[in-house]
Every structure is written in structure tokens, then in C-alpha cells.
Length: 324
Picture 1 (spheres, rainbow, N blue to C red):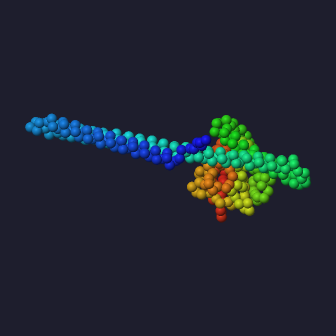
Picture 2 (picture 1 turned 90 degrees about the horizontal axis):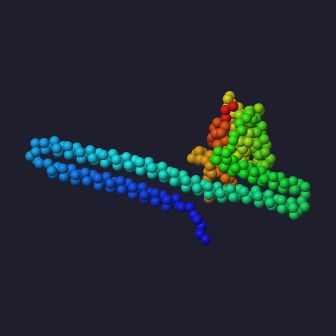
Picture 3 (picture 1 turned 45 degrees about the horizontal axis):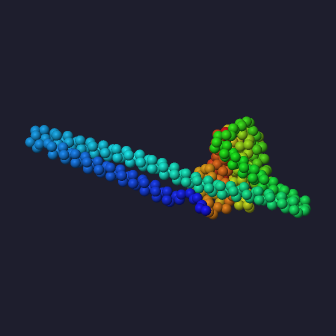
């Protein structure tokens, strides 16, 4: 049984450059052939003029001017075709590389999502089988139940991300804008994160009574994804700080961690769909590459702006600003 593999980028690149060079060579050959034909026609016309003709000089000048005009025409047409070929080549090359890169990211997403789905299911199954087969003390039972609920919540959040991404791409989600208490949403998300990750130190400075015109479900998803991203990449012994304040007519949300930080070249790419920081071969952090993509879409839906900056002495700060 043969395994179907995607075409290698090296082979596609070779074929692309071969065809491009072939077209340029054909264009050059076309110019040389036409210019040679133009010279031959000019020589034939000159040979038909008698040297003792009183208008010999004027006729010779006209023939030479015609030859030069033809040469200029060939050069102009050749350069136009060359420019069109190069513009089209650049467009095709970038589109092809983008598509191949996107396909690779989709493949990595499928592998990641398989792992992300199987892990909480396997943990929940193991916990339930343990509860079913063994008579445990009340404290141990509650611990297993809490762990199972945590994995179920993780699975639910993952499914929400996938479903919302599908709805977003298909234009099927209708945003329900209304006046919501952003302070309550932020405090609820932070408390939920603390209960899910009790070993993590999560601090907050959330201003009271901050209201915003928005979709409460989407804003909750925004905060949860940013918090999970910080938990995922920050060291377990380092704190995560959440800030929510209102400055004038702007609402500013910031989530800071003391993780490894993000390279300058990746700061714009991390919000792309399926993109995950680092190498696919060496990456240890879990994830699907949808969290920050959804964050950006949610912020843009609320006419806001999201960015990432360096934290001091290390780490990252994800900043979101909305109009109040």
C-alpha cells in the first residue's frame, strides 16, 4: 500500500525556475530572430536603391530610420512581455509557496488536533475507569472528578475554537453586540484559570465597572485564549499578570508572562491561522495554532487592536485596546 505524499517544495521550485528561464530564453530568441530579420529586410531595401539616384541619401535615411523604429518596437514589446512574465512569475511563485506553506500548516494542525483531542479523552476515560473499578477515599475521588472536569473543560474550549473558526471562515457567526460588563468577564476568566491551574501564580489588576459594547461569548473566548497561551509558554514557577484599565475613551487589556518571549520576526505571524511559534520538529508546547488567530479576529470584530511586545526582563505582553 503506497502512501500519498505532498509534492516536495524543492522539486516544485526547480520546475518553476526551469519554466521561467525557458520563457525568458524564448523571449530573447524571439527578439534576436526579429532583429536579424529586420536587418536583412533593411539590406534588401538598400540594395534596391541605385547609387546614382538623386534621392539616394534621403531613401537610405528613411530605410535606416524604419530599421531603427522596428528595433525600438521589438525592444519595447520585448520589455513589456518580460515585465508581464516577471510580474506573473513573482505572483505565481509567492502564491504557490504560500499555498504549500499553508498546506504544511494544515497537516501540522491535523496532527496537533489529533493529539489535543485524544489527550483529554484518554485522561477522562482513565479517571472514570479508576472510579468505577476501585473504591477510593472521598478526597481521592473528588481529586479525580476535578481532574476529569478540567480535561472536559479543556476539550470544550478546544471544540469551541474549532467550531468558531469554521463559522468565522464561512461567515456563519452572527455577533450579538450589547452592553456588557468587561470587568465581570475578566474576573470570571481569571478565577476559572486559577481553578484550572492551581499550581500557577496568576495575579490581576482589574479596574471596576468597565463596560463595553460587545459579544460576551467572544470576549470570554478572547481572554481564555490569551490566558491559556500565557500558561502554555510561561514557566510554571513564574507569575502571569492580567491588567484591565480604562484610559480616557480606551479600554486596555494586557496579559504579561515571563516566558521565553517571541522573536521579532514572528510577532506578526503568530496571529496567522495555524501558525505556531518555533520549529515543528522541536516544539514541546501543546496547541493547534488557532488561539491567537481567533483572538485577532475577535478583536477586529470589536474594532479593536491587538499586539505583542517584549516583557522585562523576559517574556511577552499581549495588549488589546478597545474604544469604550
